Image (cartoon, rainbow over all chains, first blue to last red):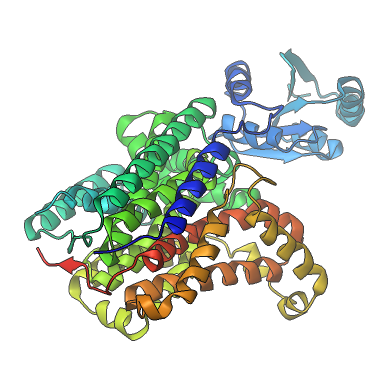
Length: 141
Length: 421
């Protein structure tokens, strides 16, 4: 026969009660939520279907953006860059750029500047606005 | 046969279901076999047939008798806590069907690639340094195998695999404590693990830490009870996560000579072999070296640096506080500490703990110490490393600590608690 002293028993019960109460506290609110991934997936997939490589460009501070896109666009190889010059070089190599900016006017202008040299060399860069996203693809000289 | 047999089945199901499927699928992918999912499924069916024929789930668990009132109260608390854990799992799985950060960035990410590309996934996984390219396939390979078999990528599959490990962990906690003690102790331990927010939260996140926690407990239980599946649990511990491989060594080291002797039994060796081969093969031919190993220079300097110990110990102590970060440990660690004090004060009356119980305590204490030192030693910023990984590492060894605490609170006489069937 085993015995559990009342104090010890009470402590176990209290610990379980505290744990259950804390378990049901709401999680911290998050800006990025998963329905957002799914909607991005739906709108972006047709545009990147033919791309050999996808480059995600963003000034977004939250790295969830990078992660969600990487996951959503699988199994396309996705490269994340925050260097717009590098992005411009990759688009000339045939990659498809998917861009999302927290500050769209500055972000888009900076990206346009970076792509300026490609345009000057006669490369046509097609730009599509897809929801909050920009999709850019080189159409060749 | 008693009414506890079904709990033993639940406890071992993670090994014989998703665990073994993951290993077999992983081996088929590593070998670049065509249709690896069918190879894995056929092998799994064959293994199940052999185990069923030999009646090989190991010893039956028969807890000691105890006062009916205490047992009834503990069982009621356990029922509420388990229902709460399952409820939270369901709610969070609805809110975040794909799991949380590491599930999307590593485990389910690998599962998607393995399901879509098979062996060709190596190039994509290896190129993505942020996606844990050195991590073993773990339960992600089980998810990939089922996705291939069902030609879908339904999140329900990864949720179901995570759920099997959650239930397996709770059932194993019950079995471990019931092996060494009373129903009351087993019910309270299961309740405390189920009521710890980190356990149900990480499970719903579809992270690998709950499978590792199950592996530690199952391997420790299996080795002390001479269960034939102990070897498999030990191997799956390695296959689940790199952290698991370290804890597997710890479990074997703590069981010392008796554990090594147990591993000579053919059934244990057979169980250990497949996941261990998969783990080593993955390390040798698939995975790049871990960045924690590559950047391991200067460990001594970091271990001697007060600037690193300070934030890590502050983080560690912060985890013991129930309110600071609500959805982590509640007062479970305080409970373990209180039980340690109680056990120390009453050690004369309660006698020397059995080797199996002592092993649980040693694994728990050494595991906590090991992870604190590891976080100090790695080359990443100490505060960041503790905040992102420290609490998950603590969760891996929490159930073994709770099991030890419950066994030590249990009065009465030391006994084996095991009968052969």
